[in-house]
Image (cartoon, rainbow, N blue to C red; front, side, top):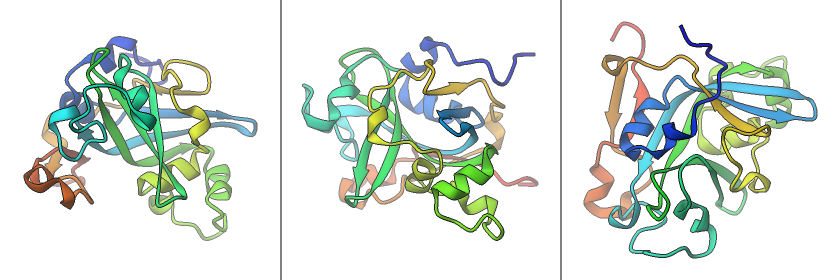
Length: 201
């Protein structure tokens, strides 16, 4: 049995993006901070599949441009961008070099460093709800102190990394349309959001 804290190999990220998004469920995301290690178990992801995907930042872009530059590198790097001018979103770059695709990590379950995550989110440690702590992409980045300073960080390094975790069996994964991509036309209906089914379903 593999150690759940063993880092994922570089090859993990070079595969099909939809497959990788599904396979990221249950993996551990770890962040090293001056206050200690923070870790969570990934529970929600979305796949974004390059120039042919109207919901993807690299849609209709055959070459790097601006914030998407890192997406054109080989998989396994952190793509972090700002939304609404204030919240960071953490993405895992996938595929081979020149194929600009990525997986958005939307939500996670806290594992290590809950008090620090709550403090990072400016939540009262006496009354915060654990399930809500990392329940959205902005909340996840805030809780784990993931900022744009980590843009391009290799996900097998010492600042931010992913581990084997507890992979979710395929029969326990639900696929749904992605969230907040209505602008993408028919692509908004593609079932590329993956979540773990609640127990008993």
